[in-house]
Length: 218
Length: 144
Image (cartoon, rainbow over all chains, first blue to last red; front, side):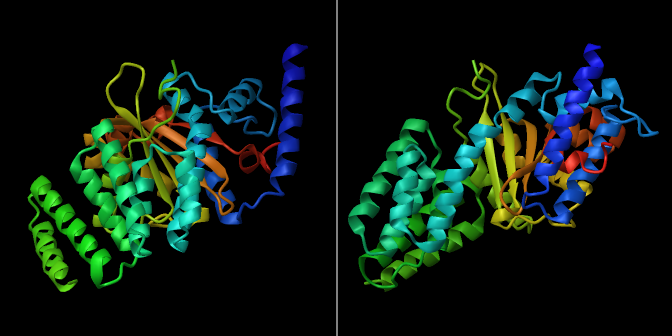
C-alpha cells in the first residue's frame, strides 16, 4: 500500500503546484520551451511520470519527483543545483547594482556594497560613478578599496583593467578638469596593461588615444 | 564541507573575461550573469553557474527553444576564458520575465564538448545532463 499512497500524494502535490503555477508570470514561449526540453530530458532518462498510454508509471514518478528537486546520483550535479539559493542572493545584489549603475544612484550602490563589501567590481563602479559626479574623495577611497581587495585576493591587474574600462563605458565623465584627467589616466593605464597582457595592438592604440585625451583635459 | 565553501564567492575576474570573449564573438550579454564558482573542497578548478535572466533582457542568440539552450551550453563549454579558469561543469539557470527560475540544467563541460563534436549523440548526452525545473511548467497537461 505504501507505494500507491506515495504516488497519489505526489500526484496530488503536483496538481496543486500546477494550479499555483498558473498564477505566475510565465509567458507561453517560456512555458513551451521549458516543457520541450524537460520532456525530452525525461523521456531520455526514463523519468516520465506517465507511460505512453497515459497510465501512472511508479518508478518514473519517483525519478520524476527526484528530478524536480534537482536530486541526482551525481554529487557534482547536486552541488551546483544546490547552489541555487546562494547564487540567487548574489544575483539579487548584482541586479540591484545594475539598476544603480543605470540610474547613477550612489545611495543604492552604497547599500549594495554594504551587503557585499568584499566585491571589488561593485567598488570599482562606485569609484567611477563618484568621479562622474565630481566626488573625488569617494573616487579615491573606493579606488583604494579596489586595490586593497585586489592585493588581498591576488587579482591580476588585467582583470581590474577590464572592469574599469566597462565602468568608464557606463558613466559619463566631464570632459574638462580633474575628473577628465583621472579618467584618461585610468584608461591609458588599463589599456596599457591589457596590451602587455595580450599583445593586442588595438589596446596599445587605445592607450595612446587616452594619453592624448588626458592632455586635452587641462 | 560545502563544495563551494560556506559563503559563495564567485570569481568575478573570470566572468569579466568570459563577457569580453562573448561580446567579441558578437553575442549580446545583456541579462547574462555568469558565476564562476571555484571548488572549495580541495579540488582544483571551478564550475560555472550562468543565470540567463529574461527579466533583465536576456535573449537567446537564436529562437528560444531547447536547442538554443543546448547551443548556449556548447558556446560556454568551448570558452577559452572558462577553460583558463578551470571550469569543468556548466549549469544554466533560465529565468522568466518575472526573474523566477524555470529551468536549471547542468552537465560536465567535457560531455558538452563531446556532444558538440558529435562524439556522443543527443540520447547519450541527455544521460549526462541533470535538470531542475519549476514543476508547473513540466506537469501541466501531462498528469491526469
